[in-house]
Image (cartoon, rainbow over all chains, first blue to last red; front, side, top):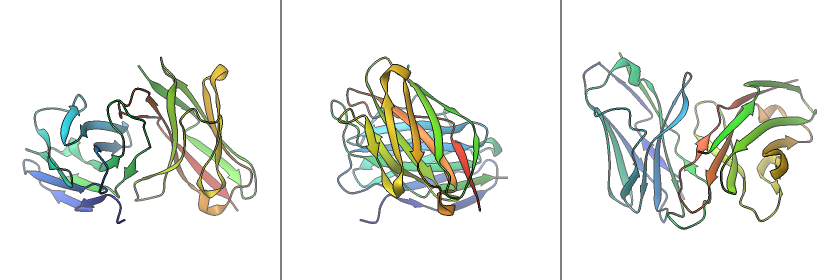
Length: 117
Length: 114
């Protein structure tokens, strides 16, 4: 298995531009998570999907952030317009299990390092 | 609400010495507990997990952790540190019931001194 695949690995963009981050979870995993990691705030859960349905988006910072999961093998996180404070490493993770099932632990992608200048 | 506290943001040990990374959790229900490791410029990798089957959990790379309910702790240990163990380690908690949301600690950076 290739693991969780994220693209791009690095993204540098100008303030105000739209940014789209992509994630392909492990085949068969039915839960998908987007996290943001910064030195100041550590790991923050942005949104959690189960069976392609958003379950918890309380961590999405504001309306500039949106996430979609159109099918079991693909998810996107979009920031529009981007701001310098969005600079961080964004991780996608997937896992087995779901509501009413056990937690088997996450498999993380390698992350996208976003720099907004 | 669930949470984890990792004592010490930085820990230094000599190569060959015992590694002890501390984690205390707060959960209103019996939790799932995890340790993850993050190497530079990489994502987090699952080291081990506690899911109530056994209180002493063995993971990869020679690490193990013991669940102590009376102390609400889940400390990570390794008898003999290796240079390749230098990384950041995260403790994490998930409350039962299948809701998959995991709360991570703030991480402990382990330095191994030759």
